[in-house]
Length: 243
Image 1 (cartoon, helix red, strand yellow):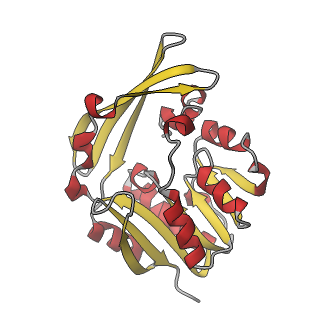
Image 2 (cartoon, one colour):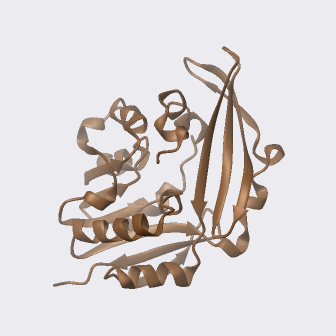
């Protein structure tokens, strides 16, 4: 199930204006450089910001996402021809011999169902070369990030070219650990239209992620802190063992 925020063309075009500051991606670009990666698969690439950043640096990049509307946005961007765009999920990825696969932002947490999570990890492992790495991030559930997802705390307005001022906010609708559901509201002031996107994220503990990686055949090398959310998020570096 693709959230409307990514799958509805009216909302997909709003993602970049509202997420203009993607300094968090510099961390993952640095990891790609640290690992000497040349071929990268960006799982849940969305509107393609990270995939294009890597492609600009000369890497061979495949961007994968189940939201066609988001991929359409990505394909219209400058330099999009340098990236292979795949409409789908990681479960069915072929063996690409990738050096690195990434799941940044909320991608890992948006994979809610246990079978889909296992299928994603196994699909990514298949697409990596022996010795290739998987890097993913996920919020620490102990920090209860959702308590700050209120209308008062998240409400903001951004001017979007071609659309005009758009007001948005997030409100939690259900907390049933490990699942947290919320709704995003978007008010297009130029037309008076109000759009909604409902989402659910799964908050996995560090031991849960470590166990899942081991069960799917990875070796966990390191768990780092996320520089953009210090003390609130885990960054896992795992690899497919060499044959």
